[in-house]
Length: 328
Ligand code: NAD
Image (cartoon, rainbow, N blue to C red; front, side, top):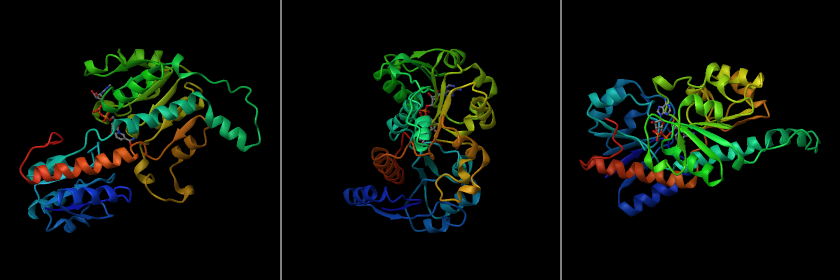
């Protein structure tokens, strides 16, 4: 079968080539993302596999894909808000995502950043760059004495809880769905308890109507002034101006962010540093804030899984089978 793959990263190519050789399917790899301008490139293919942060909401894209005889649209990513599911359904396209390609990848960056925060490494980096090699005033904490609060104990929140437990921390969690398998690693409680009791609050919910700005002036005010906030999930979960205010007013001790509400303007791009949004500039200048450019997922294990799960789904759906990753 012939498959077209949009926005292929250089790091994905060897895994795509290996999969193609192993399965005998032909894969054409493109650098561009799917859009009204590039949809025609999918003509003549049996299957399509995309990965991108830019929206593809125009119904015409789905109409064209259906007119080319395509039956599916595989998104090799977790979040699928960039896709117009209704338009896909209306045009008979089954959409799949990859709900869990390596939860550990994201969990491990969150824990890494939490460890950097509790050891005050941003402040030490700043001091040392200024020739200040004193440690006075920079006393740190040890993770095994701390309480970690997980908001959203799904794939990534659950993996984070397992790591924090292994490091000896106490883990609290809030999640409307109860997972008995996580019992050894966390204690379920409510949001207020997570916010008020935790030394590290790590959010891992999806971005949906009831979670937009779930971290806001009110919820930040409930956190300990010594607590750190970790967001490896979605920027829209956080009211960024409120977070900046809480940091400036020492209402919380620091934050690690892999996602920002306005990240599509500059993450995954090479830009003139002068043009980045002001919120980012303000946060980046704070030694108690760690920012990464939505790179938590970017490990070799995750990339291999993303490629293989996505392409296997394409084959399954094109052959008329069902995928457990189907969204419609
Ligand atoms: P998941 O669906 O496995 O888990 C999400 C959990 O949040 C579920 O258990 C759900 O019940 C819970 N939840 C929903 N609403 C809630 C609420 N109001 N309060 C508390 N819990 C709530 O998702 P996941 O795969 O663990 O992904 C978590 C987040 O990480 C998502 O936002 C996803 O988009 C993001 N993500 C980020 C990266 C990255 O590179 N930074 C990569 C993958 C995923």
